[in-house]
Amino acid sequence: PGWFSEISPMWPGEAHSLKVEKILFQGKSDYQNVMVFQSSTYGKVLVLDGVIQLTERDECAYQEMITHLPLCSIPSPKKVLVIGGGDGGVLREVARHSSVEQIDICEIDKMVVDVSKQFFPDVAMGYEDPRVVLHIGDGVAFLKAVPEGTYDAIIVDSSDPIGPAQELFEKPFFELVGKALRPGGVVCTQAESIWLHMHIIEDIVANCRQIFKGSVNYAWTTVPTYPSGVIGFMLCSTEGPPVDFKHPINPIDVDDSHSETRKPLKFYNSEIHTAAFCLPSFAKKVIDSK
Ligand SMILES: NCCCN[C@H]1CC[C@H](NCCCN)CC1
Image (cartoon, rainbow, N blue to C red; front, side, top):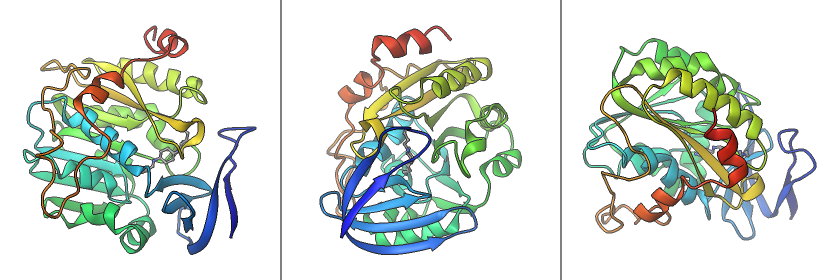
């Protein structure tokens, strides 16, 4: 009873608050503080080091967009790697693609996996897919061990640059991602907010344009419980068969993406895929000029 406020130096002077019904879990892993609470109006909420990672009510927007923007942009994704994403939501979305044969996930914090399985079964259901192989460890070390050109798609579902995910926003990591992708392979990363982090986005875009010689595009969507209510994604492809991120050639239709066990898509569709790449002028100026 009371309120949780998401106060962070990453978004100074503002805080999003959610009414708390009950705290369900509090723990400290080797990497971060982990908390789960029942909110009054957004379902259960997962919080890492005081930052909201997902809520049951709006997680669909983030998990569906970060997954289907890349996977619907290439003809037939077979091998997919998820860096981060320990809650399992991205796995649930990748599993909707019948062409996919192998889903590797590398999550540094096992407590996030265990807590998600215990409190967020509809999110962690992604782990039940037989194509999923879970690696607990650091994404940089994992990528260093991956043979060149292994993956069709890599999804970097990270937290923010303060904390264990910091290295996932730096150039050496993007270089390793580029090497692990096949020619014409795609990467999609969590790329912060155009309202809060244009400077971080500017650096990410500059690094990506140096490393990825295919397409480099920024997309964004609405997630009410993330600061400023929006979150962005960096979509890049390696040199090779051209990728046009703005026009999904491998559409995942709302009706054929679910089954008796799987719930239908709540957020993603082909129109919102294309619309996600339309940017306000203040962001276009920075992103398109890099
Ligand atoms: N699978 C869900 C993981 C959530 N990823 C991130 C969690 C932290 C969040 N902060 C938003 C900071 C303002 N851009 C971004 C998404």
